[in-house]
Figure 1 (cartoon, rainbow, N blue to C red):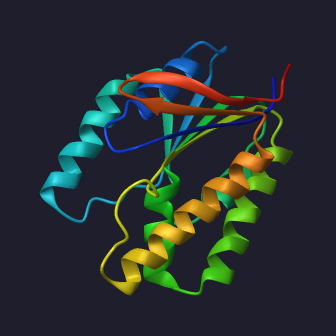
Figure 2: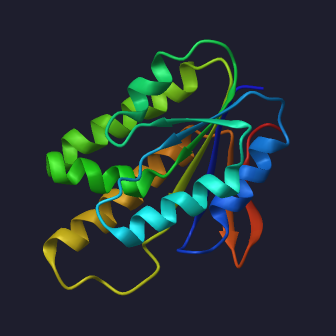
Figure 3: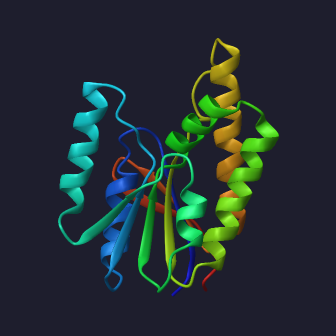
Length: 175
């Protein structure tokens, strides 16, 4: 089974837990591509909690800026879980705030995931349901997250929305 499965949801919606369960339902080995960076103590704790959730059966690759390249050099067909797109977008915005450059990177990620021989599960935050942010950078981030999610969803075989720890299948192109 190859292809992209996209898990979307708000903060603490259960999207990562559901994505982990989906990955663990597939044959091992399993690879976790982490985009988070620990810039403070609180984020360090969050990362440690995520590592504990995964357990020892997972191999982790830290890919805060280039998860697309990390996928493109993989061999075999291990299940890959990329967590998460919105943290990656934040990292990219810190490098270069040109939306065209960022969306090119998202397209490159999608192409790498589609070319990979195994399943790729991608986690992303759905951030567009709240109020309009008051500053330009926050609005740019919200818009980029929405555009990135749309691009990935268009290329995914399956799209799942996590709400209150439950999953709602939004699209399933495997049927």
